[in-house]
Length: 363
Image: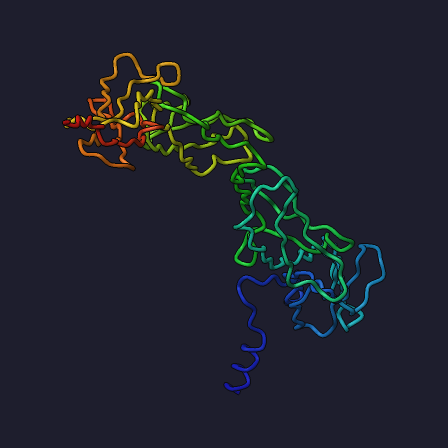
């Protein structure tokens, strides 16, 4: 008897959170449902104590049966139930409504790698792959497309005939919103701008001379900066005064939101030595006189340009004393500014003939 009492007590135990009707039956409750493409029962959990059955309908005044209502699509559904005792002398319970629901299915999503997108004048967008679509449902993720360089907040939006059955929330399964970056492009000389060029045929003249021709814009608005012998680039075109080799650095500074600044370029530039043309006084052949002799030189002022304040002197070497042929004298420069010039005709040849003798014959 004690065992039978315990068994009955166990069978009739009702959790404290479950509702019961007037007959002590545990009433049905709504199921936590998520769309899966199949028919799903909207309620469950009924437990009968009194002989009889629970009956259901989707309408209060509809036809009731023991079949639990089902649904496929996400949404809210009204389910009415009542308990009908087996004993016909006992009254059925009043119809009670349960509002059940089927939730949209959360999809998993995988974004494409878009870390290397660089502005190219075309429209770009990331792609997102959806996982978890049921059966033959037609669903895809739509995202905006962008052309200009920048960082964009993008949220994937579901579209397609069956999109309403699913959701894309930020969760452990999917980051529905991401940041999408299009990097600035690097300007290319010749295509996007015309690079500066070296000044040609620059010759020392004692003044500051521009070393390059200014760069020009082409497809992109911007400016140029330059430097010589330093990394501090400025807008002024660099100049040089003394002869020698120079390296001019330059950079194109872009004003476009879609282009970065160019890399630093370099241009070799040369200012040539000033040219001195000599006017030789050459009385070859010379006649032997026992002294050093040979051609002398003066500056041809019409064909030479010597800066007025420059310290430059002409020195001629190579004079000979003895009779001979194929002699040469050479002119060179001395003075504080001699290294700024070169002599174009620095060498001439000459010869020294024997001195004639007069012979006087005796009788």
